[in-house]
Structures are given as C-alpha cells and as structure tokens.
Length: 129
Image (spheres, rainbow, N blue to C red):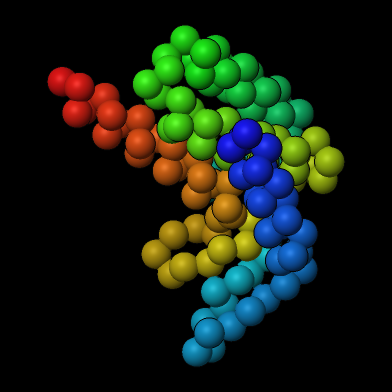
C-alpha cells in the first residue's frame, strides 16, 4: 500500500510545482525544470531508452521485493521513486524536477524517496555483517 501512496504524493507535488519558481531570501528554493536525462542531467534526450531502463529497474526491484522480505521497506521506496519518474517519462517525455538547493542539482520527491530506499537497504546490509 505504501508504493501507490508515495507515487501519488510524488505526482501531486510535481503537478503543484509545475512552472513555478518560489524564492526564499532571494534564492529559488522551488525551481521548475524539465529533465530529459538521468542523474546530474546525463544522457539528455534519450527518453525512450531511459524509459525502458526505468521499467526494467522496477521489474528487478519488484523481484527482490518478493524475494527479500527484510528489505521490503527500502525496496518499496526505490520502486516508488522509479515509478514516479517513469510516469513522467511516459506522459511528459521528461522528468519534472523542482527542488533546488545550492549544493545539488535540481531534483524531485521521487528522487528523495528512491535515495532514502537505497540508504535503508545499505544500512540494513551493513548492520547484518
């Protein structure tokens, strides 16, 4: 039940912040951007192949979700983030990014959710050793 909720939340935030710029103390903390690439804007304008890769990633993560019950929370977060960005690629032809902090390229909620999933899985695997 967590995955559809997180995907919906991601899509709602993207809808809210589409074409928006919001400043805090003269710095644009919300800055709408269309990203046709992947992390750090690599592989720009390769939407078809990136969509296929995203779908493959979702299938692989789903396989591990059913195989490793102890990693389900982290995998749920990773699947949610991947699904949110895949929806963007399919329906828009790009990923909607809008969160702007000075030290990192512009990103979105799906990116945060997926990154938290990776962190949880890494922490779990380290703890088991």
